[in-house]
Image 1 (cartoon, rainbow, N blue to C red):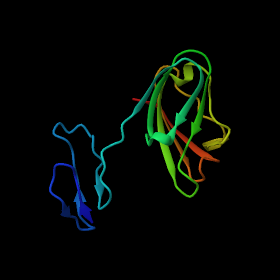
Image 2 (cartoon, rainbow, N blue to C red):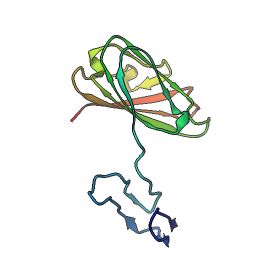
Image 3 (cartoon, rainbow, N blue to C red):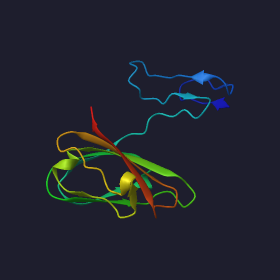
Image 4 (cartoon, rainbow, N blue to C red):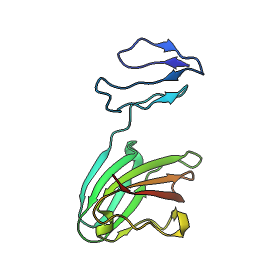
Length: 147
């Protein structure tokens, strides 16, 4: 495998080599991997304050990590422009105070147990969504009350 990192000399990495990278302040801006792809962690798109209504998660920009705060009235999320059928597409949504208001998800989201999770009213939840069929069906999972 060829290793190409901006500002570094390219080299070859054997398949069994373990590669660990961190920036100078060790702030975890880099993925650590064993004999695989190395990439900087994707930026988070801040949706900001979500004052109800419809909030579209547009995946056409390539961003796969979003964050927002639910603060007033019902919010309905939609997902648009996932990768084409046959390509896995995953994104995360870090939602603050999601349980403080009603949050609706697309009917195409399949949740464990068959129902959407009860989100944290005063705290942070991490939601993960995955599709392999161009967004026809999504699998949703949640890590609730992240500290």
